[in-house]
Image (cartoon, rainbow, N blue to C red; front, side, top):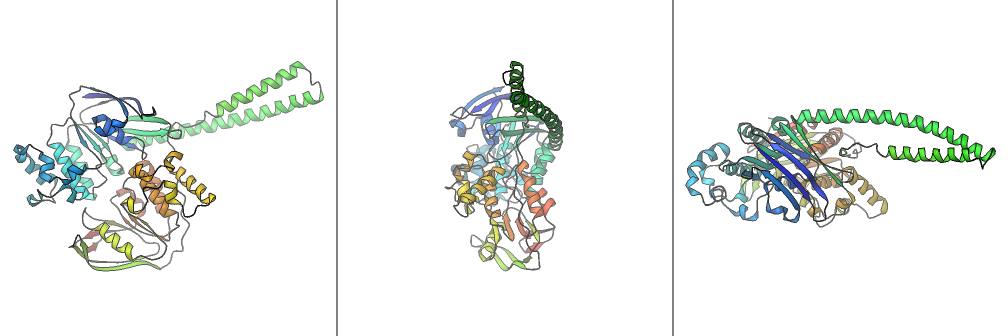
Length: 492
């Protein structure tokens, strides 16, 4: 259908995307994955030639040039947020109102004609995504390019989005951190990696599903590790043999004839062999990004101790009642996932609980600005003291989360959403909390970070109260799920 070639560099000449080409065909569902800050959004913006990439050196070759992209970004512009739904979708093409109505009814069933004049800023994240997709569907789009459309969707929205992708004939290139969506929808995978302290960009295009890609990647890594073990055993034998020869020649030089040119030549050859082996050993590395490492939390004493209890007759949002009869008592060791549709008040309730909480409870808000001082860097945000040992520990922990030294010292406001999520989580974990209150903790994290987060929360012995739409997180960690309705909690 079309071919694209891209080469993207910073103004300083560092490669972000190095001479990458691919063909895109009708029916393609290309899932774009990779660690936070690895260039996925830059790739999408370069692909569709967005103005935000003007600070980069972009070489772009598209054939045929007539291809029309439908782009959905992570955020609306200030101007778009102020528009009404009708203004945003129709722009000046009011003659297309007849096409708009049936799509609106089918794609945004939670809204009615009375919402036409609502501003885009007043919509929930999930409603906003649906409206943006509706707008794209009304255009003559040859290829959809979607940057994290699943981030703001609730569970019903995720299932709806997967079904929407299933029926599109145009190819879709999408970034998603939702494992279930990737598994369900992607039939090709484009993986962005930054290797060698993020000095080298590597892109892998895999023909097949996400699960097939992970299996292939793991097989390749297993084979590589086996080769490394064989090589290390061989090198150990070579080293032992070399040491024996070196000691023998050294002994002869000291005790037999120091001026013997034959012995001196042998010693010189042995030293050359040593240098060659050291050079070979330095080649033992995997051209693959390192998985993140999270320090295990200390074991807490699990008892029947109450972590918090609440009984809220009426829950208010913007002066209006949005729900009644919310009550729960969370005890040590309980792990509760809270689910519910966009806009039902999960975060509002979370904030109510936070205001009354006492004790050593780790709190992670969905809004990273409430967790972090974005003017400070990652190290400063995570420090509880300024002694040298504390700084070293924080640097080590951030390194385990795949931060480079430069990224550790960059003000948080300039980092990606996923990097802010990692810093927020690390800041919470460094307090060694007895319980965790989390609002969408995995929302901006890549699939390659998620498994470490799942394992950490699964092993954690303290209580966890967590708002999430992450179906894999619920599957791995939570014994109990509560759905938030206008009339209180129910078990789905």
